[in-house]
Amino acid sequence: MKRKYKLGMLAAVIFVVMALFAYAFAQHPNDSIYSLVKLSSDIAFRINARYVDDINVQDLVYSGIHGMLDKLDPFSEFLEKTDYDNLMEMTSGKYSGLGMTIFLKDNWVTVMSTMEGTPAYRMGIRSGDRIVKIDSQSTLNMSTQSASKLMRGEAGTKVSLGIVREGVAEPLDYTMERAVITIKTVPFSGIINQDGKKIGYIRLSRFGEEADSELETAVADMSKKNIDGIIFDLRSNGGGLLSQAVMVANYFLPKGSEVVYTKGRTPDQNNEHYATREPMLPKVPVAVLVNDMTASASEIVAGAIQDSDRGVLIGNTTFGKGLVQQVYTLTEGTALKLTTAKWYVPSGRCIQKSSRNTRHPEALADVDSSAADSAKVDSTKIEVFHTKGGRLVYGGGGITPDIVVEPEELTPIELNLERLSMFFDYAIHYTNSHPNLKADFEVTDEMVNDFREFLKEKKFTYKNQLETQLDALQKTAKDSKKDTQITPEINSLRAAIEKDKESEFVQSANYIKRSLKRDILTRLFSESEVYQQVVLRTDPYVLKAVSILSSPKDYAGILGGEKSN
Image (cartoon, rainbow, N blue to C red; front, side):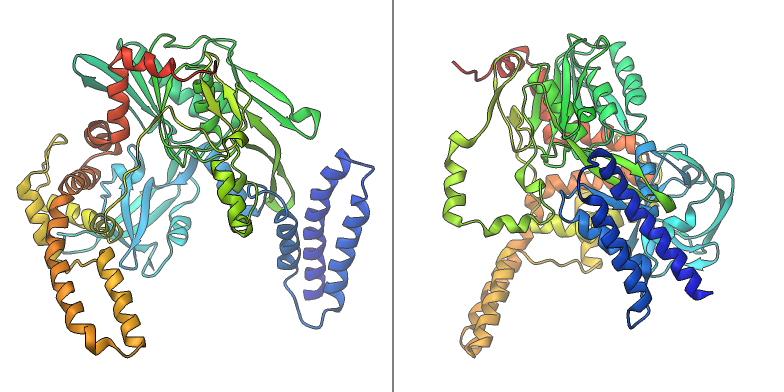
């Protein structure tokens, strides 16, 4: 019986391999691929029949598939059932569950936030709640993946949670009915009032199936408010569906404008995409926010807007993924995600970064250093393109924004406060005694001082760069048996550094205030209030965009920037 099962499993996974090659054979029937497929299957059957030890047939064949794809680009993947299901969930933006974001804290599953309108939100689950049981199963040392799997299930079914909440003596028991949860592609849109001008802001988090319809709702709302400019936030948007990128571009580009074109090995992959409808806000100035995690479909939209001189790009050079993948479903719920084309924005540039072409970018470090250095300064190797209005733009390395905003680099104290969830912990502590805070509250100096005392109670410590260097020096001295000679000096330096660290807290006061407000709002209110009260008021990228959109002269000057002679 066991032997029959193994043979059946082998046949199934070999069928997956055959399916992978069948597509390629259909495209290129004269290739020798058929004989290679037969060779692969013969070897697999022979190993299964004769190898000295029992083997996991699925692992054997799947490793062969992964080995094949390892020779390709990093975006071509074999998706096992769980991975394929996750991809479909991301694309649709829907799943059946409770509607909360969780993370591990002190080895317990803990609620980070809940989504408005979901079962978790309606039942009053709060940020900071510790989920100690799921259907009587302890979550101690449970992974977030395992916890999510237990909490998800068919809509209409029920799940029981045991909750421990700070400030509540007894554990709380909840029984919740699972529902279909829709993850919004537009988590927030709103208006910024600045010196008599109204600037719209829309955040698009991904290009899922609902991107077009959700953006239509947001833009339609903006069109009724007589706005003076619009900020379109694509930061950390990793992309999604090409079709949705084209639809989204329709909201900004004139009808008939080219959005993107693709080129592949086969004719069916060579396509041109254009804006097919009139934009809702054709004359409103546009600022697009991008960063180094703006990728793929996001880069298509940002690049099309830049190449058409329809708006100003603000932020950092984008990720640089100029490849198109198609998903081919296989047996056993598996699929092949395969790169089939490259895409080009209207100016003709492909923004694919060379480091994105290989699964092993570390291999690029083996290039002769002198050659690499000369390449950095050889501007003749940079591909130059032109926007519709004649501005210079460049290819081969992501999309460079028109206005650069230096990304915020956290200081050691800020980094460690975030890493150890100190803002999150204080938000729970503070809101227990201040449950009726209004959303527009301000973080006072008194609150900052209280936070400082809270850190002392929590025995919060961290090392800055000087302390790390001292540790290295002390280790070197100890290894060379000279530590007794310099230890007094090192201890003296440590005391001076510790005193100086007191000033680091003061220097980070603005960041601390902003982070405290963010996590307190998350605890008491919704994500929308975090955007309204924190992002729109303090985010340096947003503030830069507001400044440019509020000045028609500055905006026009950027779009009339450097041009070729």
